[in-house]
Length: 94
Image 1 (tube, one colour):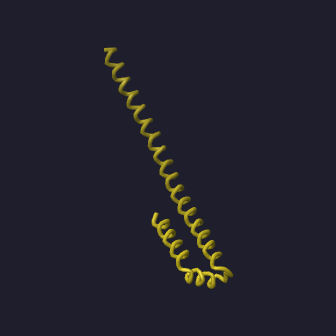
Image 2: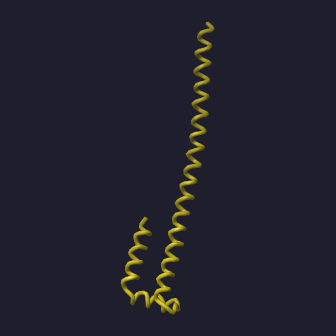
Image 3: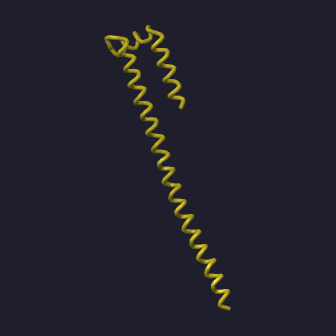
């Protein structure tokens, strides 16, 4: 989340301070400073995309683990219900 806020601040700084854009464009040998702004925007989009991909992957793994735990717990509950029903059935036979 901090990345997004920093990128928004960077966009505002780059759009307000033309000298910074000129400096960035000279570093990367870009002819026009506006194109440097587009470069910064494209790089920022890739950073956002990567961070969202990492978050999605992490959450996907958590969901998989939780699903497996739920399956194990359901199986345990079914086994305990079966034992409980067997105990009730055997007490009526006496």
